[in-house]
Length: 297
Image (cartoon, rainbow, N blue to C red; front, side):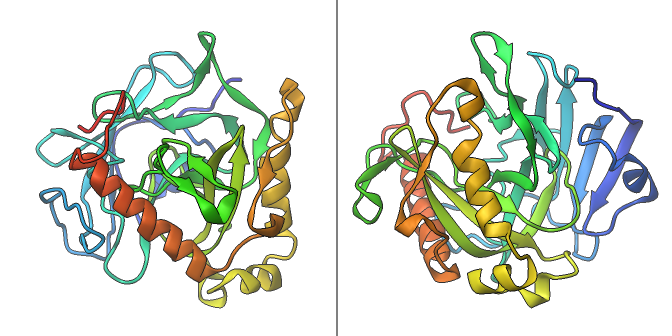
């Protein structure tokens, strides 16, 4: 799969898109030396010392730097601060934005199929394309929403959740399905609000899917809970569930299952999931929970 690429040296993007960003948005992959993500309507703030509690509230000012070429085994998207020091998108980007919203990092832009993910076992946890048996992984068809992670969260594989059939966490940050109209880009930071969640059971492991919307989306003010999604985005909840249920079937694997009555739980439940997984992450980075092969840098 050939990806269209746009050449640039440095691009500043954030809540307000530049002309170059608008021209490049047709492709999820940029080819800059560095890309700065900044909330343009906010004062510039440097990354601060990592906070371990749910109350860590600040806005990051980071850049992304690509190493290697997209759709190759050595391609990595690193995050760096203003001094050029590499930081972890998983550990150093704050979960909270201070206004009841959350930071969301795009790994897989909507309408693409390359399976991009934060490399949780590599130093500074860059984004890379997942592999299987030495080959790059692709979904069998495009994902229809922006997909990525909530930073500073972790699904603890040693904890059995009695509310979801006793399933254990999948050892990853919590996933987000962002349902807004605009396609993000790999490594892009969005401010989102949660609307609900799905409890997916993937080969026996619990893999939460937080359903959220970008605060910049035209319909963001209309949707505040899971029932609003069905009203303003009819069919979307079912489509998300069915997509994640069935995407492994073309590879000969069984369909995934869902707990909580096979339907999306409401916003309050999603916030509970976020709080609990943020607390699990805090224990991880404080090393009160074994990290195994996970990178804490």
